[in-house]
Structures are given as C-alpha cells and as structure tokens.
Image (cartoon, rainbow, N blue to C red; front, top):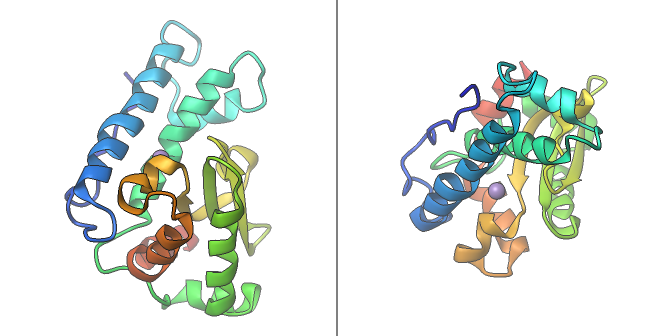
Length: 197
Ligand code: MN
C-alpha cells in the first residue's frame, strides 16, 4: 500500500471553535481516508502500484483512461497539504519571507486577503483556493474538484478546501464566513514560509 493516510498534525479538537472535531472526524477520517483507499484500489496490479503519490498524479493528469485515479490521488495530495496549512492560533498577517513576497507580488496583505477569499467564494461548486509560486511570482488561483497546481508544474504554498464537506457542519452554506475564519484564525504561515524556502 504505497499511498497512506497521514495523521493530522494536531488533535481533532485543536482547531475549535473555528473547525470542530466533528468536521475533522469526517473530513480526515472519512473523506480523506476514502480517497486513499480508492487510489490504492485503482493502482493495485498496475504499473503505478509501487509509484509515489506525486508520480501517480503527474502520470494520470489529463489521461482520459485514468480520470478516477487522478481524482482520488490528487484529493489525497490536496488534503495532506491542507491539514498542514492550518494550526491552532494561526491566521492574521504573516511575517518573514512570505510577507515581503506578498507585498512585492500581490500589493500587500490586504490585497492577499481580498483575492484569496474571493478565489474561494467564486469557485463554483467544489474545489480549492490556492496561493502558489509560478515562474518565481506569487499568484492566487482556484481549481475545481480534485485539480491541483502541482500536477501542472506550479508550486503550492497555501490552500483552502472549499468543498462543502470542509465547512458545512460548522458554517452550513456560509462559505465566505469559513474563508474569513481560515484567513484570520487558522493559516499556518510558518508552513507557508517553509514551502517558499
Ligand atoms: Mn476536503
């Protein structure tokens, strides 16, 4: 079984009251786990059975015969990354290299907040809002469903899951409120800085 479900980097109640233990029980223990189990079933007995996750994603993206594998493998990657993008007591303006880069590439922290939140709000249906590094510059992007910048040679630095399963138990239909809380209370800028480095 080469694809594994990583442990959460904090306890299930660590992000309360912003994201409940109940949400993390389902989101990590059911949704993320299902993507891991499905991807492992789909690679069993194929030439990708022993490949690492990054290779599986890059070899399945855009292949019409491997849509199911891409979707499940990319969702595994995106969720493993998403957990690390949050921490208890996180959020607010960053410090360090990422702040300088936000100032020079995006026009400042307030612009980052506006654009990142807007990317999440305007992703129609399920998907992800991203801060990425492309050609040496920061960009804010969004992807639908399972799609992920790393499949397209773009380096992810930060992601917010905007699938309903990420916020519905805690925020019902209020995706904008979830995104505001993600930005103000949850972002792990130390992790973002480590990705930039
Ligand atoms: Mn999710």
